[in-house]
Image 1: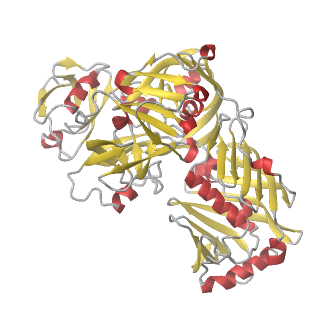
Image 2: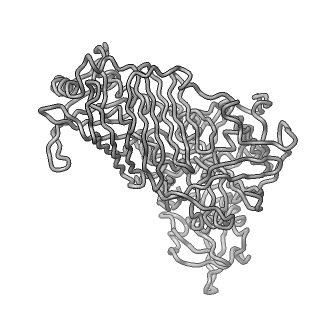
Length: 623
């Protein structure tokens, strides 16, 4: 299953003030301004209102409306020169808040939970705030150069480039003669977003824009902001930006009888990887998938329709295979064992194709909300889980402690080392069935595919299916535990999905996590990992080279891995299998397949084809 980000088209909202109202400050010691850029900066400052008028700006209040992804509603941004900012959006069915308060950075998700803002997102927000108060124009923590002129909307523009550590860029297009600005280009993590500022008015000696149009690579994230209030120096209090306490942000979760923990709840580890548990959604029995990589709880559209829910909007949902659209529904309550969680705001997606490829329906994906609210104790080796009250959890779980790092959209990341390299940051994703995915930029930087036997596989989820390279890593170290000969997918093609990032090295999936009892304790910023009885056993891997999906009483070959036993034997996509080692294909067909994935080289595998013929393969570690 794909790691899914929170479907929020305003996720990359560019602050209007940062584009049209920088304020001058004394040039810092670390200024990095190319000589050819300096005159253009001065003309731009004069056009804005001049250094004296800009230097008097201490805080700024913006209030207006935003239109995005078929939704609209009020938007407000309040910011202070000393590093504080509060942005609130209310799109009726989807509300969120993001805040900077000095070193602290927090946000309120669509279900009202307060969570830490990820480091990359916080850094980007702070850069936007710096631009609102001119630190970028003075070269503070940024390299400023002048690029060649560019054509935009039928005219030539002078271009100032602001290059940040980590590769992010901000380009400001200016009129060469007057220093006036209209267009800017923001390149973050390799993705480009254009912003146009319009309806510029002179108020109090400063030029202020009252309309902003943002154009994204993904049109679903295009947005229009209209400011009805633009006010300076209101004297914004410190309390406005502070993280809410427990009284202001009550938990969504309730444990039966005010217990400290639920009883152990049996789960089905489908294909030994995916966590399926039985529960209720708005009182209706259903299967629920537990997915730490889901940035919002998701209902399959068929499930949403069956519950009589009406979705609003068409917001982007980003997964491994790219980006698709999701609707938003409110008031969802989930019950699992002694846990009641809600009301939750959820996304609705068509999960039918994912369920078909996986081999069973996926009515509901329970995402980050439960991990934010509770300690989640997943005992993979014994196929059970329980939920605990974080306020009454001692924080001294069994096994090794591993720090978790806040990531974007409420996700959590961990540090781990591969092939003896220094530790790198990986996303934590119980919804990824594979052991590990390494992202393209990290793999290329360290030459991880050089000199290794490789093949290809097909995978994906939200956003569609993609091909990835496969290879074996000799060593993966997590929380002091070393795993040997780890089958790994390498994401190679940029499809605009969740894996197309330079901010992370990769994605840690269930194929490694299932070797442990894993206690997710986000309240104490950690995991507890206790190895299971089969920890030292060789890792399961594909030994045949057939990617298949179940269609009734047959398996359909979707992909044949290059260099695999199946490829050598001439298998083709589209062929149909009716029996495995003589047993007809049924709902638990995957159990025989799993046995082959753990078999030694040379073990026989027999297939009865839909036409009655019988074919055989012998297992092999082909990558």
